[in-house]
Image 1 (cartoon, rainbow, N blue to C red):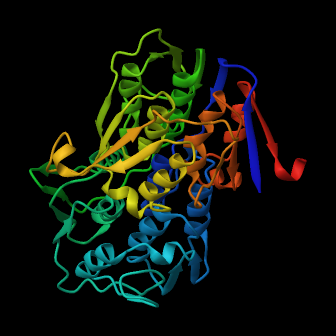
Image 2 (cartoon, rainbow, N blue to C red; image 1 turned 180 degrees about the vertical axis):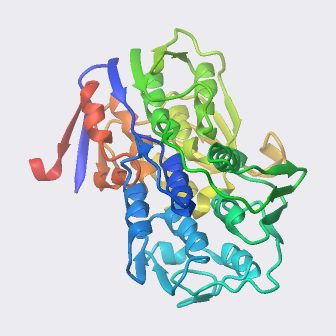
Length: 421
């Protein structure tokens, strides 16, 4: 299945009601499951991953399949480790290639009984009932791996008999996602301390209370890209907060430099195309916001604005190797996305990638592959403002934003699926 995407106008106006954040929704669901009483979650994300997590948390079966959903698998691993009974947690073929060993090792130190049913360090898992005898309340974990491992441990921490003292070792990646977790825990009554590299959570109870999920800033990034590639834009996105817990909200600051202005309203934000971008070269560290790196790589390539990207370490272990996927798909239109040798990097001690769109060519209606990665589909979609494009496996957006194509149609894009011809 492919989709052909064109834009009937480069003057973009309209209103989009963004769905709730998948990251926030998934954390709220785990916290609700850990509460002694349920509570309402308003504007829960309609993302496939979130709906799957909700269903698996309510499942009474002894085999739970997380499919492609990495966050779902990691959060469930920690949650199920301290629930009664014996569970098998599995996933798709790609999920069984994504490492889980660091989280399993940490949970085992806390008393979890987890066995690998296949390759050591990878799903699927057999999760038995935890044994708390002599289980330490202190453990260390590498901070340069997925922040979801750390968030999974933090959310179960207050339910452990001794709480948890968690030491983060090495270079901390995706810090805003850990802060998001801690701020949500605070909303539900759980206190913590974070001093230097150590986070302490005492044993305590979550307090159930109604919760409203903020809209997804990662999803908003695609509309910022549309605004950047438009001739003019006056677009309202509903559901976003000025004081956001999401690291990807930094997109508003990056895009201001690239010629897109943001105004907060009573219900969300207003995007407008500015006349003159303030920078000619984008130099950004995506360590705290890796999910918007694909969006910015496409924008830089499409506007022939060189980009120096660093902090991309975690992109290699996402739904696909996103660095390799970007290199392959941008090359289809003449855009270079290449790792720089240290001598040419802005900082020789960091890995940097250069985006160079000087040879951009959209003359052949390119077909972009998505690698079972929702963000690949959505990051490349704004290119349709410049010329017709095709995107393979458009249904992949269901992972985080099922209504994406329909929302694009509301603001002047036209979509034709292969089966419609």
